[in-house]
Image 1 (spheres, helix red, strand yellow):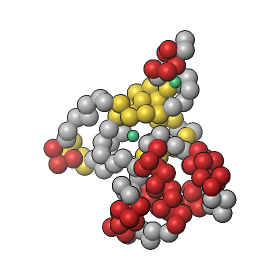
Image 2 (cartoon, helix red, strand yellow):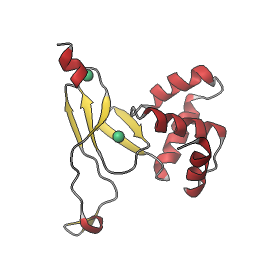
Image 3 (cartoon, helix red, strand yellow):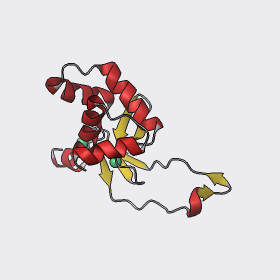
Image 4 (tube, helix red, strand yellow):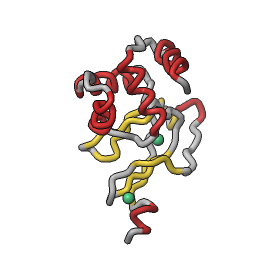
Length: 137
Ligand SMILES: [Zn+2]
Ligand SMILES: [Zn+2]
């Protein structure tokens, strides 16, 4: 997605596309590294020192509420953000902490109804040692 499309994407979700919001969404879409708010702050504040941690937290909360990003709580003490909305499985390395997409099949639920309950969010994740950590063992 280029920056014009990112702008339209935000407008379509009812979010005013401020410069900071565009930068944060662009970051999430280009890295796909499932960062925490702190990781985003560390990276972006180098280039844009006016961007405060509070703005990043508020922006991510808005994005999540409006369905622009999904939040991953694989560990209860850490929230990760992902701009890829289609259901996909994640893998978190217990050694280096990396979170990545993995090619596991997610079951397709008809009409998002399961045993009479309506699904609004699907989270599938695995934990273990990533391929890089396995190599350096
Ligand atoms: Zn690892
Ligand atoms: Zn993901």
